[in-house]
Image (cartoon, rainbow, N blue to C red; front, side):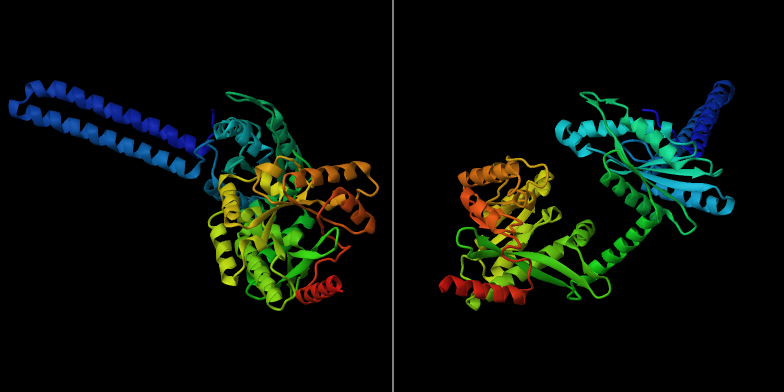
Length: 508
């Protein structure tokens, strides 16, 4: 693989060659001196003379070798070992230099961040060696198609950055990005397979206020928007994203303070029997109300919690609160011991000693494992790796129930119903809500209910809102349902009142 090195590195290599020639000349001259002088010297001086020349030669060779080793170590410290491209450290240095030049001389500096599409699928299908080979073969492609003076860096995994220092300001960022995208789109022949790949690319142009960190962050925000617009997309960072990134940073900071400041609360939504409308359990749902930012949607703060690692502590807090509330309801006679509580589990929590921690919370509250159900979406199960799979089986062995949430909302596969250690399937509301008027959706819901029941799984239909939907679910033999027909998410006090009234209705 050809790797293009910066000018200063080429000069250093040229200097190494010159120094090697000098050393060889010294060694050669030393040898000639020994041959000419030694026969004419007294016998006692012949050996010292020879040894002296030899030692001088060895010292010179050692010095050259040490300089070569230092150069190799310096290169290794600033370059990615797999691709030979710049690493984060060198990118940061070049970025700082480019921004200083821009402030002094004008022109433009822009950063592009690229993430390969379907790279994980390549690794899963053909192995990590194929993934590494793809990255190695892409490296010279990127250096060849990047503008002169650019720094192409690998940030890790399948993520790359291209820093463009354009003193004239003549380059068109979108054109540069399109040329790079076209280069990525060309098929690549690997050892065992021909790969067609593409990348999603985000661009940000430096302002006077930017530094290396903000450029990378802004390019990253643009790249994620490009991913959302479709594979192979290109997005330019703009003012709207600037405000979005500012809010993102504010929320991330506030997220770490929210737990200690008692800003989180748990709401509960009932899960009822389709035939008798008896309340069999509740789903615990996390809510966040910030004193300045107001109510923050889980769809906004849960991904932040996952990225920052705060999800581990927050997720366990929700389980702790839900179990505490379950015990309080039991003690007050509001529910019996068959009543269950469901808590959503993030894929980012599936690591380490999660099962041990959950076990500790169950012991702390004196709740049997079967009373707790942890819900995972099928999109999470799609990405489950070896460690996460181990954690799921540890939870299952503990006796905690596992539920497949939002079934049908993603790349649904019936294989999850027997491959994953789940005991409950929750059919997504997009199917349930439309089955009254759409016979296809009705047939799908009926088929899933029939298969799940046949496999001995509990089935819960989500998003139930009408009597007609309840009637259809009864006909299909669906045992349980959840939705605004029975009640939406409620604060603890309202849920307690709901459960007491539900009990009275059953005993009338």
